[in-house]
Image (cartoon, rainbow, N blue to C red; front, side, top):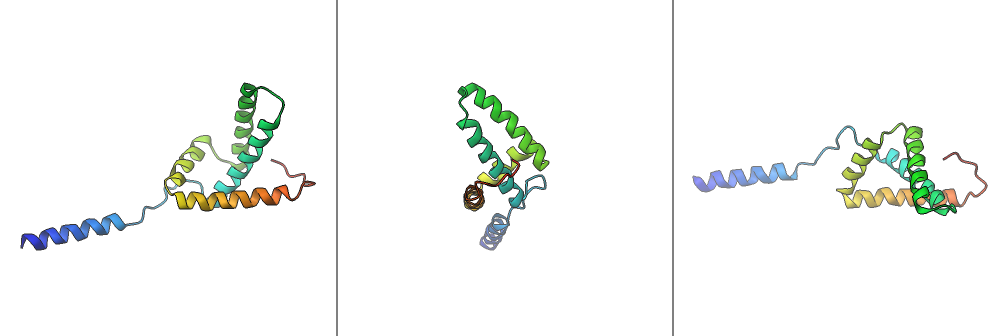
Length: 117
């Protein structure tokens, strides 16, 4: 009888362990995360290419990042929590960055584009 109870508890534990974790509500959806990351990497490239000191580029980058969050209607805390969430799933993060790179390649192939960042 004890073996049956142990087996039942073991199977129950496996069942709960296999249950998929739902994404918290405040986490950015994947498409929004990609959009924000694309803009962040574009602005980071611009800030690092300017002929200013490292400290000044960091201040500029912080200001540009705030503009990006405003543009996308995202707070820095939601973005940070979303990054933490997606970093827990390396395969998902890899998929997101594949989309980010694809978007950056498309933007790079349109040098005459006057897109607003």
